[in-house]
Length: 487
Image 1 (cartoon, rainbow, N blue to C red):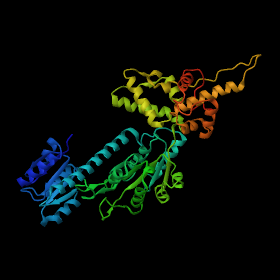
Image 2: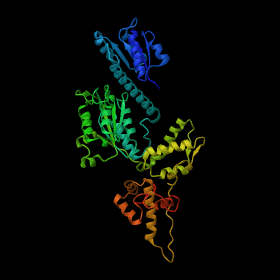
Image 3: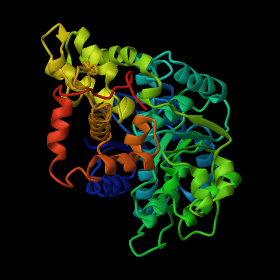
Image 4: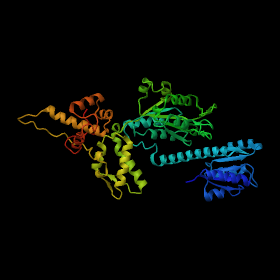
């Protein structure tokens, strides 16, 4: 939907130029010659941004500004002024105007200020929506559960949320790192200011630097106008740097300046810009190990690691699974307009015994799928769950009777061990480090066992793995679960 801009100016030429130019940029622009009807116009057709002349017939621009802010305190207002009234325009900014432009103005300047005002407004709306979602659905966030591991995380959040201390969150994929960052922001005195999230991984260095720091006009070939970076956009609020370990050495040095000096230099500028942001960073990696390898700055690590939060994986908080299931069932039932169903005992057993390599994110996706498939039914059954979870119900080790002819204990244990290794590899997506973690053994030990048992190091290595896995999952032997691991 196009963002709506209302222009108030008694000069017909100015109204025409502004309307045509802003419309050509994709905005829905309309204009009035006086401020008499501004509130009625906003009420009738809506408005995302007001461009207001300081000098108007009958009603003064300052009076219009006061009236608009009385009824629409979050609406950004850009003042248009002449050289003689710049001081008045500055006074207007102190009263709540976003910015001002001076006549005669260049449209490039107006376009830049309009873009900044609307971007800031979008961030505020997004954060207001987030705030309402968190307040109505989560309280402290979707960090549902009462396991000791989770209680430890919640305790740290409660203690440090109100501070401006830098926080480093470490956790595996799907453990809820951004959720924790948002919860910290929401429970701080910055909650009414922007929360700006930046995914540092997978973005080319040049693009990421521009995204973070912005640029001034002429900084490079395509820089036709100034552009505010995300660090500035987070002013007064919180900057969340996800996958901070992905930052290049050059960007690490620049982020260090932000954390230490609270200032940025937009690309192409020699003028520093002061910023007031709280920095929260997240990583899946061991930053100390990266420091030893020369891949991460030690000084930046200690600046980020003022408060450390380690997020537990699902296998460390198994008792939270029923609580999370109930939470997500109600969430997605509301979204789909359905009555919340309940998980059957068999389905709950399978969910409890699955290893959850994708952690809370995977569990949430599975519940959403189950709610969608079971709409119209009171019960969510085992058949509503993905096959890999259906197969997670533990199969007891078969009873081996030792007769007169005896039995080879080594052969029985080798067969049992092979099935467990295959199940662990399957659950881990054949990522050997993860499979070793599931089995509580070293990665080198896992590889030695695979070689000894003739299991290929890659899933498609010899073609026999598919059959072996099928046998393990269809009941021919025991399956690895969170509650029944053999190390």
